Image 1 (cartoon, rainbow, N blue to C red):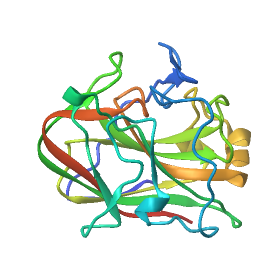
Image 2 (cartoon, rainbow, N blue to C red):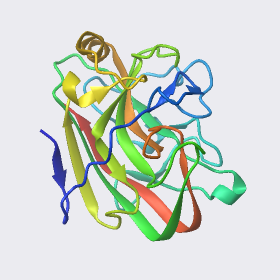
Image 3 (cartoon, rainbow, N blue to C red):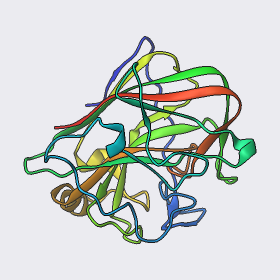
Image 4 (cartoon, one colour):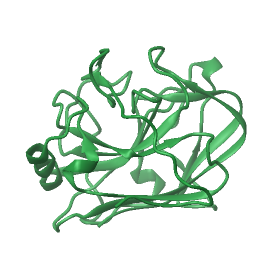
Length: 233
């Protein structure tokens, strides 16, 4: 069951179509990074099994521009980053941390806050459209961005940036195959179960209504993403 704690009713956006393994296609998928490089995320491991680290240095900002390698510690939560300005070529795409499990997994839960001061959102992919979004994502160990079953998105976790900003939100998604789609926008129970057995990364990605990880920026105002908690249990 989707759990969303907010002062307002959660509105779930339309289903995502996306891009196929780094090459955008009209009929393909939702998630690959617009500037994804071959090889996938760095070869690092988590500090402990079954625990999502909240240390900002254990989170990696990937496939982005004008961004630091890691978010920064923040007194309002675990960590945060400022959304970059589109006029300088900046964009944020993936923010992930290594994770592995030795127990059966049931849910992914994120609690976050978007501090928004008159932000004007930009979707980087010219074939996508506003509102800009963020979504929950999980990734298999040693994913090299070529396997369509290497990354999975919870489409019901899609949050439209600007819609309920400046308040704390919690989204919880069951780790069941009916809630997750792969890089080709497809559900596959067997492949998803294999990913859970070999899970290597968890995090959030930023994009538009159709491409989950193609990046967002701002063209005016300011905005900051604050992660308060992220758990997999």
